Structures are given as structure tokens and as C-alpha cells.
Image 1 (cartoon, rainbow, N blue to C red):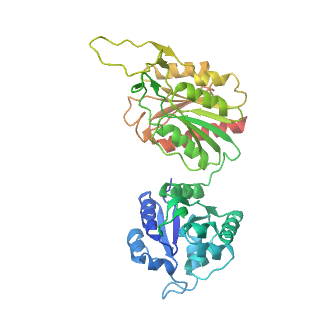
Image 2 (cartoon, helix red, strand yellow; image 1 turned 180 degrees about the horizontal axis):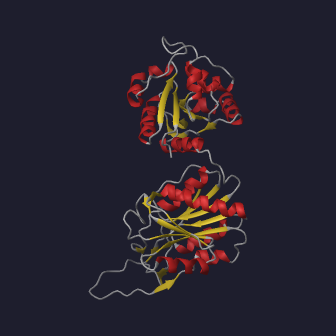
Length: 398
């Protein structure tokens, strides 16, 4: 997502400045082009040489360098797709909010027309100060993106709000700023992800290998494209994209209940979860002890969530997923008809680098119109974008 994006990182004079080195390194590993500018105070916390070594570019620290001319800050302001101030001190935020431009960082920001992301980091009392809050609100009112700081132990030893946000949250903000296409703005999208676990006893459960990666990717891309996204997930270690409303469940019955609760006012339902088709007929209140005898389990059918959702579908777009190892197209077309789907995403877990627990997928998208699109191996984020492109075409027609 960040490949070839041009990002200027502005580092200001707080103890969290050392964390900016890790951020810059991450952005470069994501194939972004990164330049760094620093306030004079920032150079007391971390050397410009650190960032010059990481980026391969000279660091902008002075409005009037010996070489580069008097409009260097204008050149820097015109270059990036986004400017990221990390960390942003109370002093720098106050200057920007009140139109002051007295160093390389504030002057570049004043001249910049690209999105500016501000990552505050300061003592808890400084963050709570009403004058600071007024300045932060000024930035928000004028279109700046502010990544809310976290709560926890601060460098001074106190505990409270004001510590720099986590790296993942900051990167999410960068992705949001550089995503130009906002074609889902005003739309509500409900996504399901991950497996469901069905208890056999207090120790064991029936489940499947779904990691949730595909559903989380769909939720992320929909949010970046402007949608209001609700993500319902079974057990998964994946991290939800910032701004996505997340609800975690365990069982198929809980997922059904959550979907029915949120479905009423949604524009799109994308059911990427691998929901259990069968659950144990009874659950032992105690651990089932091992013995020499065979253990027979009675399984009962679960209620199909997509089929249940079809009854009140109306104009809502429904997208299902079909995981098949044989007769993939006939089985998937039958599911589409049976569950009144507009699109169905078919993949075979026996294909190399497809299916569960990997970051790529090989899928065929089946349309209700009869159109079929077979895509090469793509990252799950790319697959998510293509699915959303197809959904957007349907929303446009409707």
C-alpha cells in the first residue's frame, strides 16, 4: 500500500523522537520514499545522522542551509504525498495551530498542501491542558489528521494519557492519508472473519484453520476507501485496522446473533468467516477422559448465516466465500442461488499459497450475472480491493 508513496517525517523535540527511527525504518521497508526534517530541539534527542543513514537523504534542519537555496522548504512542501509529524510536541502543535512558522518543520507544514498527520506525545498534564486541547482542536477543524496518543507509563515516570501512539496506529493513519480513492464514503459495510470454535468440553473444541486474514483485509480496505466498517470475527490473532468497529465472538451462534444485530442498516455484507457447519450435539461439563473405547460424537447442523440474512436482504449487496476442493464452480453457483448472493469468492485451499494462514490467495469471483473473473495469485489486500471494486460497480448500478 505504501509502495512508491512519498512521505516527509517531521521529528520534533520530545523524548519519543527515538521512536521515529523505527517508524522511518518501517516505512522504508514498505517501499515508501522517505525524507526527514527536524526541529533544532529534536537534534538534542537523536542525531540527524541516524535518519540520513536510514533514508539515504540529507535531513532538513535549517531554514537557511549553506546549500539548497532560500526556498528549500517550499520544495519539501511540494514533494510528499503526506507529511507525518512524529512525535509532535505541544510547542510545535501550538505553533502550527496559530500560524507560526519559525523553523524548517513549521515552515514546511505551513506551505504544504498534502495531508498532514500529527502524532502528539507529551506529559499527561501538558496533554490535558485546556490551551493544548484548543490547539489540537484547531488542527482537527482545519483538516489535519491527529493520531490520538496512548495511555500508559510516560518517560517522566508518571502514568496517563500522552504517550506516543503505537507504530501500527501511526502506519494506519499514513495509509488513510495516502489512499486517494474514497468511493465507499457514506456506505456501511459489515464484514465477518475468522473461524468459529464449538466447545466439546471445558478443554477441547471443534474448529477450523481460518486465520481471519482475508476478512481483516476486506475490512481494512473498505475502511480506507471511506466506508463505515463493522467487523465481526471469530478467534483470530489479526489486528483490526484503526477506525474499524470490532466485535469478537467464539461460536457460530454468537456470530449469527452479532450479524443479525448489525445487519439492519448495512449497505453491504461480506461474509468471509469460516463458520462451523456442525456443532456438538451436547457439551460435556467436565473434561472427557481418555479411555480405550472409541469416542463417538453426535453433530448437529448450524443455522446458515447468509441464508438467514437473505430473507430481509432488499437492496443490500451480499458477498459470500466458497472454499471448495472439488467441483468448485458448480458447488459455488449452487451456493449463490441458494443464499441469494450477488457475488461469491471461490478459492481452493489445495492451491499453493492460497486459503488458510497465508498472506496471498488465488480466487475466482463469480457474479450473479454469470460473469466469472479468475485472478492470479495476489496479496489478500489486493484481493480485497478487487472484491470491493466489484461491489462498488453493483452499488453504482443500484
